[in-house]
Amino acid sequence: MRTIALYGTIAAIITAALVLFSTQGGPAFASHTYRRLQHPNAPPRPGRAGASIAHSQSYISPKHPWEFSYKRDRRNYGLSEEQCSVAFPKLYKEVDRAVAYRKKRGNVTLEELDVGWRGDGIVRALIHDNQLYIVDAHGVSDANHRPRNIATLHALSRAVTSTSEPLPDIEFTFTDHDSALREGDGDHTTWGYSRLASQESVWLMPDFGFWGWPDVGLRSYAELQSILEADEDDFLDKIPKLVWRGSMNVGSGHDAREGLLKHSADQRWSDVQTLDWSNKTDIHDKLLSMQEHCEYMFTAQTEGNTYSGRLKYLLNCHSVLVSHSMQFIEHFHHLLQPSGPEQNYVKLKRDFSDLPRKIKSLGKPANMPHTKKIANNALQTFRERYLTPAAEACYWRALIRGWASVQGFEPEVWEDSSELIEDWRGGMKGRKVLRGAPFESYVVMESVGWDVPSRPRKVCVDEG
Ligand SMILES: *[C@@H]1O[C@H](CO)[C@@H](O)[C@H](O)[C@H]1NC(C)=O
Ligand SMILES: *[C@@H]1O[C@H](CO)[C@@H](O)[C@H](O)[C@H]1NC(C)=O
Image 1 (cartoon, rainbow, N blue to C red):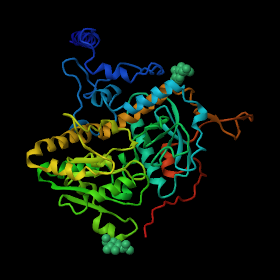
Image 2: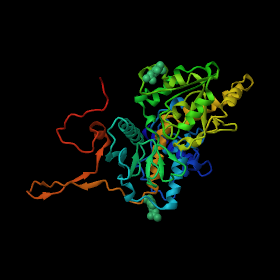
Image 3: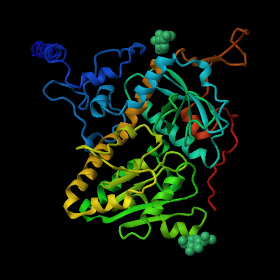
Image 4: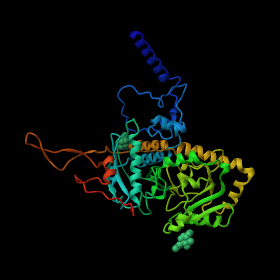
C-alpha cells in the first residue's frame, strides 16, 4: 500500500513538473509582463529553499491560469510577483520610468540619500531581510507631517511583510510633502507622492491616503471600498449633478478651482461649493464625506497645493469624473483614459471653460449609455483593479525591486555600537547593532532612539 502510494506521488510530481516546465505549453501567466519586472541589472533573486509551495492562489497551471478576482483578491496584500504582473500589467509604468532614467544617469549613490536638502518631512529608511528600518526622520512630528509619515510607513511595512518572497535590501529616502521637490530644490533623488513631468529624479510611491486620511474623515482606504460596495446606488439613480467641495486657500491649483467655480455658478446641474476650513459652521453645513460624493453622477477633480489627495477616492465612485488637465503626476495617473472605448474620465480645459457644454452633453438622455460606460470603465479600472489595496502592495514591492536594480551600493545594515562591553573572560569587545530603529518600535516610540525605561510619549491630537 505504502509503496503504491509513494509511486503514485512520484508520478504526480513528474506529471506536474512536465506540465509546468514543458516549453511547449510555457507558463500560463503573462510571462512577458512578468519578465518586464526583471530589469537586466537586477541582482539575482535569492532562491527559496525547498520546493515551491502550491497554495490555492499561486497555483498556476496551463489549463487554469491564475486570474485576479476582485472579490477574492482585492485585499490580498501578499500576491506573488507573478500574480502582481498578471493582475496589474499596466501598474508599474512610473517605476519603469524612474529605473530607465537612472540607467541613463547612472546608479543611485549613497551620497544621494542625504536628507539635509529638505528641512522637514523627510525620512531615511532601509529594508533588510523583509523588515523595514527607520534610520533618520526629519521634522515628521507636527500635525501636518505626523499622520502622513505614520500612514506611509505602515503601508510600506504592510507591503514588505505580507509577501513570502524575499525582497532585495535597499536604502532610500522618502518625503511626505505634497510635492517631493519644491521649485529651486534641484533634482534630488527621493520617493514622493507626486511630481511634475520635468522632475524625473522623483520616484513615485502611493500616497498616505491609501492607508487612511482620518484628519478629513477618511478612516481607512479599504473601508471606503467596503462602504461603496454595500451602499452605492446604481449609476442611473444617482443625483444628476456635478459635485465638488474644496478650499480656495490652495497653491498651484487655485486657478483651476476659480475656473470651476466660475463655469458652474448658477447652473441647475451644479452642486459646487467652497469650504472654509477655519469656519466650523461652514464645515458642518457643507462638508461631504467621500461616500456622499459618490452619490452624484458627476464628480469634479481639481489640483490643490499640488496634486489632489482625493482623486483616488473619487475614482472609486461609480460616477463620471471630470477633471482639468493636471500638472502633477501620481503613480496611477497614466491609467486615466480621456477618450476611446476605454475612456474612464472626462478631460476638460484647465480653466473649465468647456464644462457647461460638456455636462449638458453627457446628461442628455440619448447620451446616457455612453456616459454610463465611462463610469463603468472607471469602476473596473480603478476600484476593482488598479486602486485595490492588493495593487497598492504590488506597486510598493515593484518600487523596492526597481530601486534595487539601480542601487549602486550595498546597504550597510550593521554598525559597531559605540559602547564596549566586557566579555566573560574580562576582555572588552564591541557589539554589532542594526542601524536605525525597526518599524515595530518606531511607530510606538515615534523616534529612532530612546532611553529605557522611556519617558511617556505625547501625541499631537488635541482631545479637548
Ligand atoms: C461661516 O460659515 C457660515 C456658513 O457657510 C456663513 O454663514 C458665515 O458667514 C461664515 N462666517 C465667517 C466669519 O466667514
Ligand atoms: C548598478 O547597480 C546594479 C544593482 O546594484 C548593479 O548590478 C550594476 O552593476 C550597477 N551598474 C554599474 C554601472 O555600476
